Amino acid sequence: MQEEILLQKITEIVHECGAILLSADDIKRKTHQKEGKGNFVTDYDSRIQEILEKRLLELVPGAAFLGEEGQMDHTDISRGYAFIVDPIDGTANFTRGYNTSCISVALALDGYPILGVVYNPYQIETFHAIKGKGAFLNGERIYTSDRTLVEGLILFGTAPYHAELTRKSFEIAYQYMSRAQDLRRSGSAALDLCMIASGRAEFYFELELCPWDYAAGALIVEEAGGLTGDLQGHPLTYGRKQTVTARAPRVELLEL
Ligand code: 2AM
Ligand code: CA
Image 1: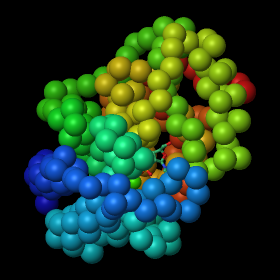
Image 2: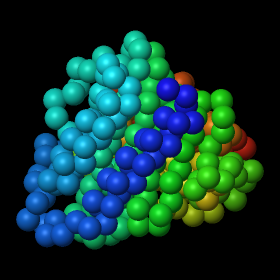
Image 3: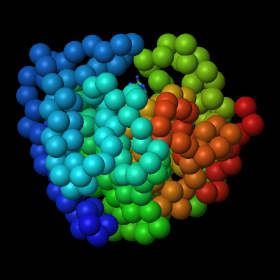
């Protein structure tokens, strides 16, 4: 299927799932604790993932499917097509009615994303990118900002489910923040990446993320002219957990 048509169909599916988020009720009763502090799942995460799995695999039959919910840690995405999907990124926000969550869908080929869609139904913002064809917000081309670190806004995730990473997360945040303008913390890695892509913020990091948290967002950042990698700038991979950074091109990584 032609990439643009595929994008249109994926976007339609993701928008339908966004409507489920907006109409969610009685979320508290439908929330369950997962392994680790601050790590939740709701009945909506599972339901949206089921819909995404069924509908996306109809579009690309035979593709692998890696999603946050379920036993998918061993899914091999290194060859052929693979969907890498987070049904709700920002689940803790969702359970609190904080209205900062999104649906994130990436299509990867031979281990690397070639198409990404991130939809925030609360702001009606759809970010997308196709490899080599730029990044867009609601159909308009977006670019990372031309600010340097001194003028920059820092975003970070605290990896709350890994208590041993808390101190290090704040030490790194302090290093960047003390050289920058200010700092924000949203609770959704995919949306943070889209903030970098759209030039609203300049540097983002989180010490441990899963591929479904960053696969779509990282492609959107790169296609918007930004840089992604780990804390040293080594390229991201998409088959395992890792540290993720994203930045506007004039922001340099600090030697920590
Ligand atoms: P989630 O809302 O889909 O769970 C918050 O710091 C960010 O980290 C969110 O994007 C959140 O995604 C993600 N996250 C939550 N639990 C995680 C885990 N166990 N491993 C990696 N990332 C996680
Ligand atoms: Ca999730």
